[in-house]
Picture (tube, rainbow, N blue to C red):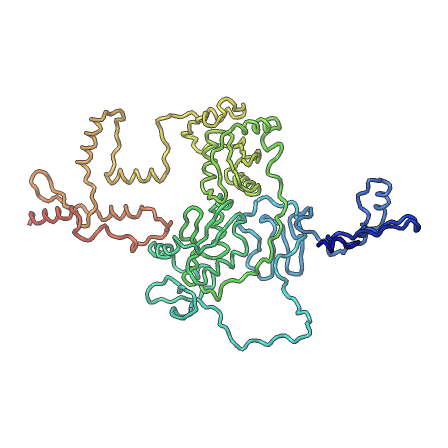
Length: 563
């Protein structure tokens, strides 16, 4: 290292530029060259000098490709439309009607839509994209690639036939259910319309047999905020290919009006809903369903942009002045919500809850924390049609509604008593709502029963299983005596033998009381869990085997004594 250090003009750090040589005084001033050349940057577009900036703007811009000017999902495309045909390509037309934007194809059984269940009743006023068919073109010529087209395969693949499925023990074949259920000795037959494919109405035990395997199975069709879409038609048929029942689970916005969802499912698919619990629907394909002869629809290649509808919230709603609307909106800020909607929940009872809340208060608020703005706006639009009501605000993720001028109570004969302390508007009713305050005075001792409960009470009274107390102000001892007296007079027991009634004097037989007709009436009035409208005598099991009840033993002993 000492030798290296003694050398002249040697730099130990090779990464740094070497030391320039000593300039000779006779050659004049010497300027060393910089180690790294200074890059020449392009002039900045943002120049602080306004004169230079103005000169740059005057330069002509290059013309862009017209293909890049097509609108996309981020452009503000808007075109007002009216009812009727807005675009046509031969027999393929795009219509604006009562069902919103629909697509009509030649030979189609109905007009296609993106969503069949979530279309508002209000007609659209504009579209957000040019009117294009979201389906594949009818014909597309093959482009020339320099090669001849491939030859057809010699292997013939048969179409899937539900009437002749592959054998159960064949390897590599998924489970396939046979058509049916059919009675013994009957075979499925081809059906041309919906009634022929469904066949005879299902019995209660058949419905239970079909539903039980799907109760805890996750093989299902999920129906979300878009409702029943067009491509779900083919999805449901793919479930019916191997199973008789398709399970559809609905969550979110469509569950506000489940009756509409069920109607659309049966109308578009041709199946039958055999069971419904909350947001879960079981769709039966039919006894004579064949996957080979199913209706085949073209698939939508993309989701069309939703059209523009009229505004839901008006600055001056119908039936109110601007001052009254502002006053209601101020009161709504301090109003308690009747419920809180969770994301992807089941809102089956929401319409009923809002109707019940309108019996006690002219204003109702529903809290929607965490929901998308489009979701609670769709919920508000559904409540406006189903309740009906007037929408006032969507502020703070809450739906504020007013019941309107033409609102009438559902309990005109016996209206409900409002508890104004819970609604926080005890002293804030406007003069326009005084009429509703007068109607909400009723007798607190009376109760309201549903027609079903009233019919059950009548059956109990006719069958001597219940009694009406004429005296209401009874003490505990008097009430106990009434109960013991009723137990002694009414011996309502179900048995298989005909009961023999003996007199208390001589013990001779006065006659037989046949309760067969009475038991048949009792069983015929039992509600079916699956909403079975058809009468099925085979589904009614007897109470027990003959002679198994204690009353039967008593009857048999009395008969032996009479002999």
